[in-house]
Length: 140
Picture 1 (spheres, helix red, strand yellow):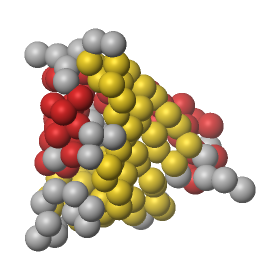
Picture 2 (cartoon, rainbow, N blue to C red; picture 1 turned 30 degrees about the vertical axis):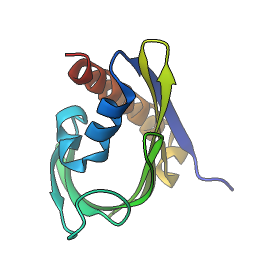
Picture 3 (cartoon, rainbow, N blue to C red; picture 1 turned 135 degrees about the vertical axis):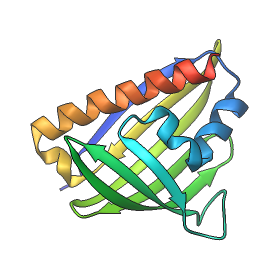
Picture 4 (tube, rainbow, N blue to C red; picture 1 turned 90 degrees about the vertical axis):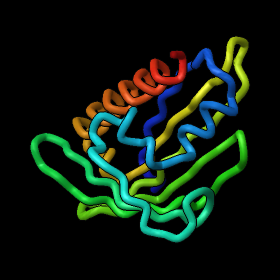
């Protein structure tokens, strides 16, 4: 059985290079992902494949530290990381495409947690909010 996945997308009126660079720098993740309190890069590599980092996430009053590693980067096209926490793994990806007035961002997350319909709905809302915040930041 395939791992359940959610996908959200938005168009941002900003150059693809600017949006890609911002998302590729995982230090910026707490600025647009409201549930991420902090990111600590744990590898000597700070950009690209092989970057490892710990995200401190707060959801529903509980805090978790999530270990992640960037597993794929296609410049100006795609960023993928694998996150591992106490409750399982998630494959997180951002795909970037040129759009009429800037950049289209497609954000997806695949995890067995989405077998629970309530968790799936909540995560869709969180990821829609994440992209809305990213859009506001990039369109300044």
